[in-house]
Image (cartoon, rainbow, N blue to C red; front, side):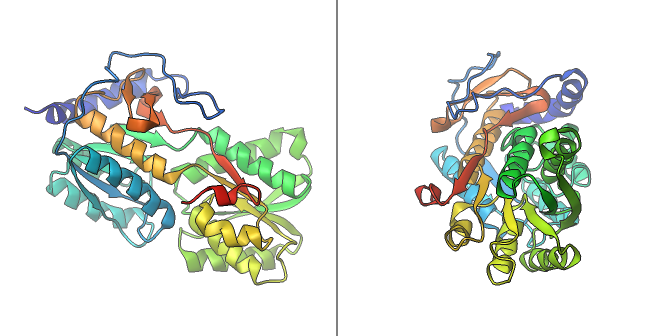
Length: 356
C-alpha cells in the first residue's frame, strides 16, 4: 500500500483527534514578511516529495483572475514534481455546483485535490468519499469543517484580514460615517470570518465609535450581481461613506460602477483585489488603497502542502514542518492549518511594483 493510501485510511481518525485536541493558533513567520519559522515537529522538512502524483485544483468558480493566479502557482509545483495537473470547476460560486466536480475527481482517483470551498459543510459527504478512495484533500482560501479535509492552507490569519480591511476603511473616511460590505456568497467561510472581526471591532473599539455598518450584501462572486448590489447600496444609503468588498470579483465590479458614476471620489472603496485588475481604478482615483496576499504563492503553498501529505512527509498533525520549495519552511498549526502570511496593501505608490 502506498504512503498516500495509508494517509487516506488514517485521515478521518486523525481529523477527529485533531479537532478534539487542537488549541491555540497557527504558526508562521513574523508579520514583517520574513520566511516562516516553525516550532519543530516529527516530520523531516528535507524529505523527498513523491513524483508522478496527480493534482486538481477546484476553485469556488472558474474565470476568476484570483483563482487563475492560484492555479498558475499550483501548476508550477505539479510540473516541478513531475506530476499531472488539472484546473476545473463550476462557473457559478455554489456548493451544489462543486459537488459533481469533487465526485468526478474522486472517481478519477486524483491524488491531491486542492479546493476553495463555497460552503463549510455541504461538500463533506463528497470529500469523505474522495478521501476514503485515497485522495488527499487540501482546502485553500476558504475552508470546510476540519473533519472533512486533511489540511487547510490559509491566506492569512482571519483577524489580520478583518483588521486590515477596517483600518484601511477608517483611514479613508476619517473613521466617521456609514459603511457597507459587499461580500461573496453568504456561506463563504473566509469572508464571514473577516466580517465577524469587522463587526466585533466596530462594536468594541472606541477608535471606530463614529463608524456604522449599515448593511452586508452578497454578489455571489458574480460580476454583474456585484455591480448591481453596489448600485443598490448607494441608492439605499444616500449617506454611505465607504464600501468594503473582501472579494476580488466584488471589489472590481464595485470599482467599475463607482468609476462611471457621480459617487467616484465621494464614496470610498476598499477590500481585497489583485493589482492587475485594480490598477486602472487606483490611477483614476476611484480606489485609494486595497489589500491582498499573492494568490500565486497561495496556490504554490497549497500544492506543496498536498504533495507533502500525499508523499507521507506530513500527516496534518500540529507542529509538523515541511519545505515548500522557494517559499521556505512551514509549520502545520492547530486543526491542520498552514498559513501563508499577512496581507499586502496596494496603493498608487506601489501598485506598479506588482504583476498578478
